[in-house]
Image (cartoon, rainbow, N blue to C red):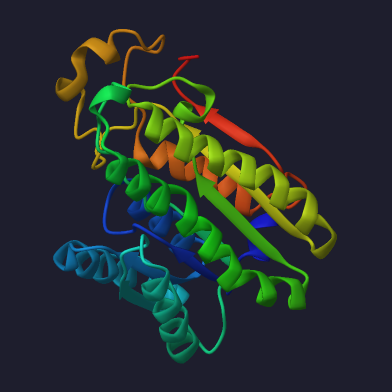
Length: 252
């Protein structure tokens, strides 16, 4: 089975306390993957997630650690890796760089420079720092899986402003470059580019953006579980690299 290749490995999932990150954590745990999970503020949610994962997948005897991290801070990411070294005795074999920031300001004349800088720190620079933290381990063992969480905004679409599009477009560009550089070490690098996914910080439910949902050809929001399905396909399919997979219900 292809999934046996990931069983027993360690995945770092950022932004794991809810939504897409939590859904990825569930699917990874189901396949026997040990987890290092980050959250920014919601300790209750991350603790509930760990309790649920440990009970639901008890037969997998999972090692799960949680880490409070603002991924906009390179220092906090460095501390994260020291904690992972201590608690797991190794660096992650898989990186799911999911934590993001998406304060919605549509027009450039309303976007302060500070907002642009913070958006790029969280949505782009953080993934750069995270990859630097995992890549030596992946190179040494000649196996690694890196998945960024991009967006339909990387293609110019979506409901957010140019600062968000720039951060996600940069992420997809970085992914494509890394995929060519790291392929010789058997490290795949891809991104998932969702459009409207419900039950997340950015889109709580369809009522919040009724007008936009009406424009989606499939007529509904996507789910965190559907997004996690794509992530799982990428981490279990080593021959796929350098790809940005649009998950949009038919939106262009």
